[in-house]
Length: 296
Image (cartoon, rainbow, N blue to C red; front, top):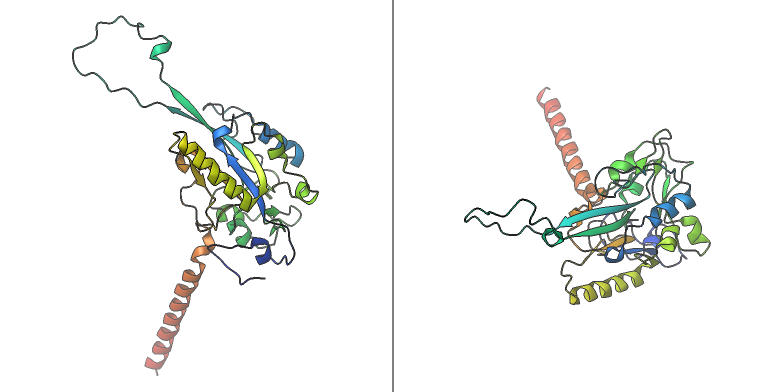
């Protein structure tokens, strides 16, 4: 077992959690460039894990019907419609064209869909796990993070501890809910239900190190084809959460997909906080001694 770490790179996540003999760390690589928005992953996740079939109403904004991850949406397929930049306006003489002359197909603005299946990131340094007071959240031998429903007391600390806004308490139940990366299927040697159901292989499951190599090669291929915006999100072990167990290939900035640009695990600032608290305690103690000595 390695020395405890609150922040930064951590090469053996399961070993840090106390597993002396464990399988390689596994996770998801989601290639959004081939996502077709079919929502098969959402349905498969609900069916296998018994997640309530709620939050399937259209929100009135594109074809997104869940809006965000939550207690009843362990997978969320985002739809982002991006219009083409507007053509420069001619500020010269007014046009005498008849209304509707430019209403044909040739005048329609081009746009593209950015679709992405979002999920819990199963962080190397998981803020939800670090703040749980009951031990309801635990690290598995596969390096993933799971909530034990029979231990969760519904305190909600994990909700504020997640830098991605993934975990949520279920209404009427109160207990925290999120993706388990199908822990029961992993223990049986099966891949998670969402990856199994994905028809385009947008959601890829496997050993994390191999997935990172595969993702880097895919980004290089897309950039060679002219997709200059292709990038990886959550694959860097030196980022604010030590890298994610579920990472993504994006075609635009993370904010476009509703993802935070620079997530940081809350425990990163613990040493500095304790240092300041210690200095404050020493200052108060010194003031108390001075006041006592001056009153004699």
